Every structure is written in structure tokens, then in C-alpha cells.
Length: 347
Ligand SMILES: *Cc1c(COP(=O)(O)O)cnc(C)c1O
Image (cartoon, rainbow, N blue to C red; front, side, top):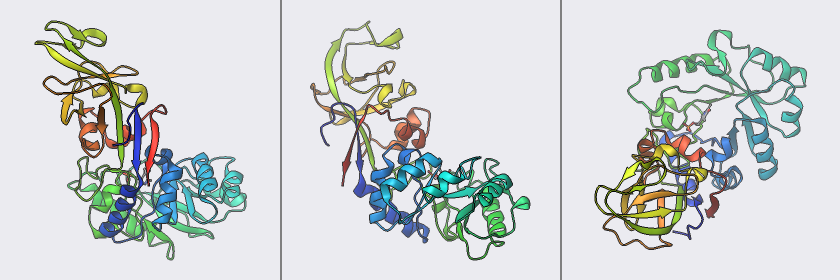
């Protein structure tokens, strides 16, 4: 593990590349990576550049601004779709950066065409009721449309009957647009089976080492490691407390390691009390409330020294388990890693 001080987020781009290849193999169709929210906090420029080296030629972002940044980083070659679509007054910026809006409404379509149009995608809402045209209100095929997509609401639950309903509704709606690329499966969708593949998948979290179903899949490799070093080790006598609000009381004498990572680095306060940290060769509970700069870990019985690395998540402490212990999901955990955590890349 690289030197963890201060809190560091290490991104293994080789693991990212391996996940990309795995998702292409499992899904059986080209992978169009989702690199929104700065590639889920891992750094969109570095991640997308590496994915391009692996063969990716089409990317998705959420915001126009994210697309502009990515275009500058990647150059003219790849297609970049913007999931927000063509917001009022944005057509000029989209066209200037050669971004393709995923049009969600008749107004967006009208604005895009009024500004001269060009290549774009279309989102069909097959039941999530979030973004996109309802199937019955989807537009006639039009010049420039090269991709049609829909998004699964429950892809993380293979037993959910809505998955098949959405798949069938998408197949029907997409048939109106022959010759366009049909993009359906997110990470979870790729693992639902070949009939969810259509022409291209759109994974995010599995590229970055999470899931797909809120629990680790052996084929997906961990990509991100959040680690920090031990700042101090102390013996806490029975009856004393640790941290703010006395949330941890030492019933018996405890050895406590203070770790140089707190909620400003992405160790959510909800890590307490169920959170676990890998330190001194063992996985140990967080003791008391996480604070801004540090958290305390009960290392009683372990040999732990100042400067030792502590892993919040990574190869030895699965992202999905960490997320579950914090009462959240891998997506939120990754995107919550704070700007103070130093990003380093293994390439
Ligand atoms: C975020 C997003 C994805 C990626 O989802 P994952 O579950 O992270 O694979 C795909 N499609 C759309 C429309 C999204 O918003």
C-alpha cells in the first residue's frame, strides 16, 4: 500500500481496466462508461483516459460542465453524451464542446433543433419516472438521433419483476428508432442476463469496484482504496470515554488508535457505530463518533504503531461492506470522499 499520510484515495487504473473488460465479457456488448461526478469521485480525466486506452469510445456524464472538462481532457475522438440533456440556453455550449445531449423532453428537442441540432441521444422513461420521454410521448425519429437509452430502477435486485417490464417496454420503444444504438443496462443490469444487453451497456459503479448488487461480485476487482495513517495510539482506562459526546465508553481498558481520516475526507459520520477499519492486520470497529479530521479505532490486543496504515475501504475491506455498515451504498461512499484526500493513481 502506498504511503497513506495524509488520508489518501488510491485509484488502481489496472483494476479499472480489468473491470471494463469483465463487464464487456459478462454483458456481451460494448461498454460505454459512465464517468459522471468526476468518475464517482475517482477522477474522470484519469479514469476516462485509461478506459480509452482499453478501447472505450463513448462516455456518459451528467452535467454539461462535466462534458466540457472531459472533452478538453480526452480530445476530439470520443463521443460524450450528457444525461441532463439540452437545458435551456445550453445548446451553444454543447455544440462548442461537441457534446451530445440525451434529450429528455419535447422542449429540449425543440431547443436543440432550433440551435442547429446535431448528433444526440434520447432517453425513454420505462418506469423510473425520473428523466426522459414517456414511451407514449416519444418523438418521431429525427435527424441526428444516434442513441436511445432507458434506465433500470431496480437493477440491484434480480428478483424485482419491474426489471423485465422495463426491458420489454424499452425494446418496444427503441424499435421505433432503427439504426440507433440501444443502451439499457447499468452495472446491475449487465448482471441480469444477456437479454438486458441490447447494443451497449452503461456501467458506473462496477467499473469503480462496487457491487453489482450491494455485495461484492468475485469478478469485480476493487479499484479505490481510502487509507490514512495512525496518528497516535493510547491506552484508555476502564470507565473513560472516547471522542465527542462520549459515544464510546471503555467498559474495560482499551487500546485506541487515532486515524488521520475524518468526515472531511469521506469517512461519513454514519460509519459510527457499525463501521470497521482494517488496521494492524485485523478489521476493527470504529470507537465513538467520527470527527472532521480523525476517527478512533479500537485496536485492543493488536500491535499498532504510529504511522501504520489504516484502510477504510480497498482490497482488504470491501467497499460494499463498508457502505452497508455506514447505512449507505457504494455510490455514495465513493462520491463522498473529500477533496482533502490526496488522489494517487496506480497505472
Ligand atoms: C448513473 C447512471 C448510470 C450508471 O449506473 P451504475 O449503477 O453506477 O452502473 C447509468 N445510466 C444512467 C442514466 C445513470 O444515471
